[in-house]
Image (cartoon, rainbow, N blue to C red; front, side, top):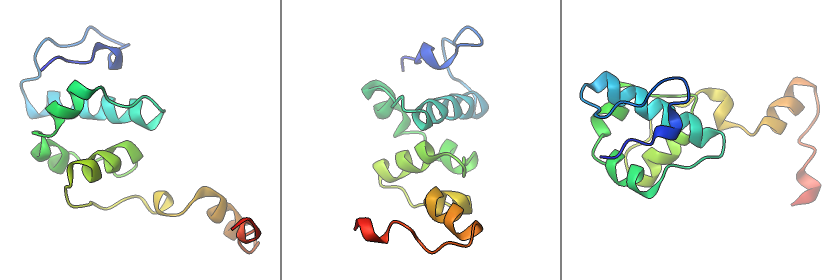
Length: 106
């Protein structure tokens, strides 16, 4: 596997990801980049498909990228943080005592 060095701005990228913890760190970095609009490369997508046990052992419930990858691979969903389940504008409307203000747009 070729490690995507772009997700290691803070250190030199490892040449090999040997331990489950090394792989979990890489998944966390890949998902973090994905969360900010930088999707994984095709090579990374192919490689991560074989890492289901890492995804299961080290879940990232707050990462939309993590949940997107699980869905992409056809793996069962895992618990999300509640704030990710509801669009932010609906949360804000509820907190501020408004009904859903976007109904007229549908």
